[in-house]
Length: 137
Image (cartoon, rainbow, N blue to C red):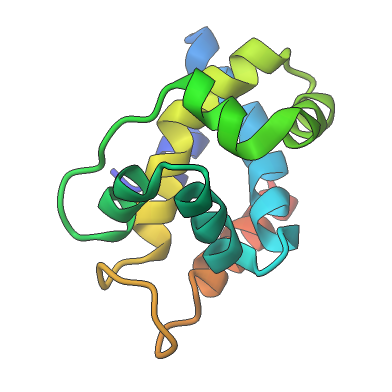
């Protein structure tokens, strides 16, 4: 099941975690779209924050390594986490827990060739497609 299928099914779910992820996705998409340098800039931020091996696993075609909410908070910073919380209507703990599940999948699906290089669009087409679809829901 792809990311979009998961989110659409989560919107009607009784599962609180799934609903939180569905609430967070539009804010996450906007964050990635507006992040300085887009997805490549976000990947660079993870590398600079000491999570290079983790983010590399999300970009590569292998298994996605997990990331903890604490690690995400350290890399993204309070400003980004608080912005996501405000935009999604969720508390910061829920945002970080949901991001630890969603972000690996989003990065993985935005880099289907298993690499982020100049010949790709940096995941922009997936991010823009998701943004457009979510705007119609």
